Length: 222
Image (cartoon, rainbow, N blue to C red; front, side, top):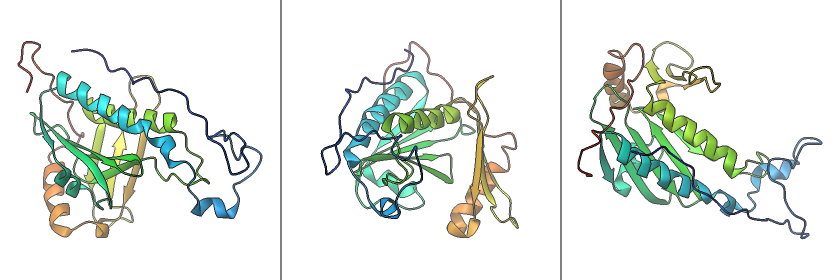
């Protein structure tokens, strides 16, 4: 069982229509983006390294934790809204039923969507448009942080009816480091049967999902 190491990705240079180098993450430092940037996506291929990061995360999780693995595009149906073009989808289900499952979906954008637990989907990149000006490495850091929050038992989901955002999640910080986060959405956006089943599970986990059980070092690879 080895520590996770992000794969090395060669630097790439991207240019605009006038041949100037585009420095993503710094484009709008002197002011807000132009209006048309919200509907434009230039060089989406810059997010392709997220696939390599997700592959490495999956390999690490399989070798380190006691999980069942289902590698099939049909697993993408777990998402609240299935992407139009799914290249691969992998579900990891920990041996402990009180530990949150993960679904990792590779999209043709290219990007990655993570279903964490039972109800919440996290896309990487979050948007991808020119106005958002996202960098692949920043998105990779957020992807890794989300996955390890689940794996380490720092992730919580709740369903609390009669609130504006009644389907909630929260992430506790790792030790003294930053990374705490929370959010929510409206229950009406979920199929009622899925929401009821999730609530039954989450109500018996008032302190959140447990950490994933580690594999026995002598276990035979699955």
